[in-house]
Length: 94
Image: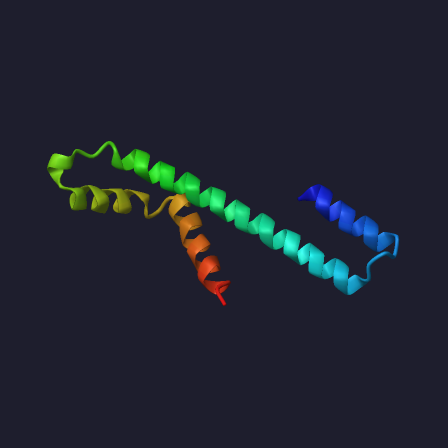
């Protein structure tokens, strides 16, 4: 996090690690921060989706409810963030 970054930069400023090591450590810390951010967004989006699905009655059919939820959420910011999350997830797979 921020304190870890400042510790890495302090080590670099004190010349205890070289530039390559500092860059590698900063990339590792940044990757972990980005993964945690994406994981939190995914959890929030899933909770929001489940809360929206609860308003649909099971008598109407679960597929009809899912279709309506997807149509209503397709233009929202949540759908955009979920789309970006999956693009980044698939792009970072080995």
